[in-house]
Amino acid sequence: LKDIQYIQSYYYNKLEFIRFDSNLGRYVGYTELGVKNAERFNKDSSIIAVRKAQKETYCLGNIGID
Image (cartoon, rainbow, N blue to C red; front, side, top):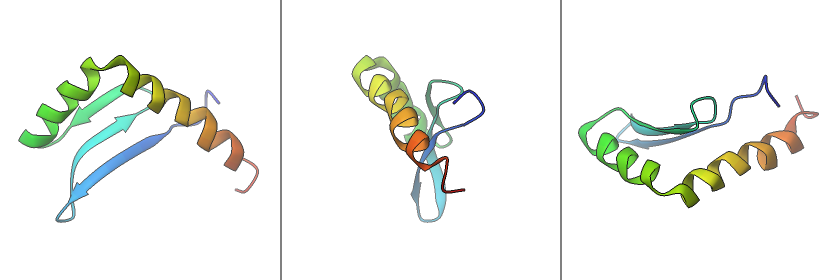
């Protein structure tokens, strides 16, 4: 799992405004709205814990497919 990166991105009008990156372990905002939401999400440890767990849940089950 160390070689695998889990990314969850959110788009509006084809523009990525926020992303969770498992290598960083936090949300990163790319627009004004995204930065505000990233700060809010990063303060909530339960949201971060869920996203970190999703890396193992989602990626581990799909490794063999590719």
